[in-house]
Image (cartoon, rainbow, N blue to C red; front, side):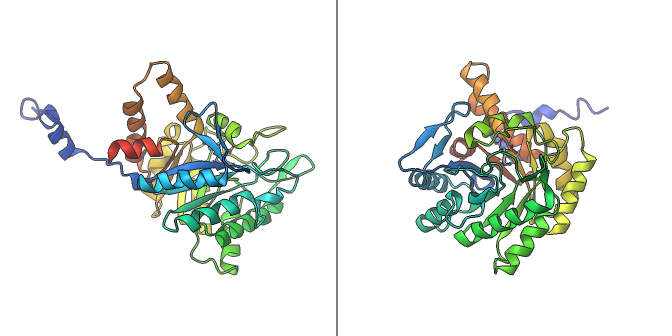
Length: 323
Ligand code: PBG
């Protein structure tokens, strides 16, 4: 008879006791803060659906990065919003593109801050798709060159990690090959490996001005119903040379974070996306949820599932609360 010998409540009696037996810890160094960089100077344009987040010009971005560094965050991930978009996503891989200039400015001000870049084309194409459109379709193989060129241009500007989020087949191999051929053997690849065609990216597309002008992303991003296929996607990116694998979004896909953690011997990242953030913030604004507790509970759950690294718009506030 387990009871009354076993009483689980014994280890819950006080905070010191609970702290002693806590299985999952949060550290600021595990959080990556997403930042949006736009042209101009002194620009700090609020993103309506994402309270506390802004489109930042490079000078403001550098200030934000200083805050991120002093909070002890693991790093930042940059999303560029170019002045002009075109059919060829020209600014995605231009050496003087908005993201490339932003990386240089950050690295000049604080070489120690880890800079990750999102490698994708949707912010840079006039049609808002993640690749080259040929006859109304996103062409896989033609897009690989853009991605490889963008990754090399980011590495040349000083990025520590490049993170392809486009979901083209073969992009990790193409990027690894180009990085190595250009002398960037030390630049790491964080693959958005299991990235789903999710409704939760809505607020991000407002922030990054990257909504597709026709159709949707379902011919390249994954069907939310498919878990075994997600494991295959991750296996392929792993074989192609990804140093780290990401699951995205996070909370609706905790099962995949756990399976990735058990199966692959590399760090697993999870992206708590814009919609996950906005949903919680909206409930907080209505007084329906307690901000700090709800936020930390989501982050703890993502860690408990097996994510080593969390990309989250809560990074600053969460770091402040736990340190
Ligand atoms: C670019 C990209 C997206 C996100 C990260 N990189 C948008 C998309 O795929 O439509 C979403 C991030 C978020 O919602 O916070 N492809």
